[in-house]
Length: 175
Image (cartoon, rainbow, N blue to C red; front, top):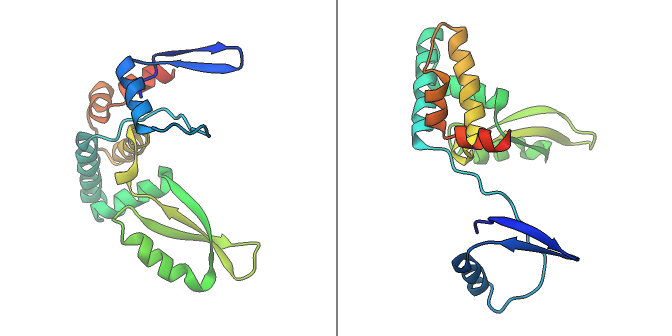
């Protein structure tokens, strides 16, 4: 639902939206049951152009440093990517890692440390960029771009990168 504004009326929060969107909400929740609703800002998904640009940079870096583009990608995911810290029984770490890594190239685990709980390990389970929104993807691309520049590869100017990643509008709104 696109919320155009709000007002506080006594103890009530009134959200302003279009009639059509209000009706759509009402029909989806018919019969309406009072309860807890979570309202979050919808983020744009990353664009396919951003994904292609990221892989092109990874490939160029890999050619210069003598490794695979997948290794470049994973290293950058590890350095700035999204992960979930998990306490996993020591006996189950290997099996969990194999299942997690089956999701794709950017899905991998690092065993970070022993936990305070005996017999458990702290594991960082990294998420591949396929799950990233445009803000997260922009952060990853910015880091890969810095990586590229550090080995003498210069990419597009900032406005072109922002157009590719779809971040310019969101950055202006957030500042």
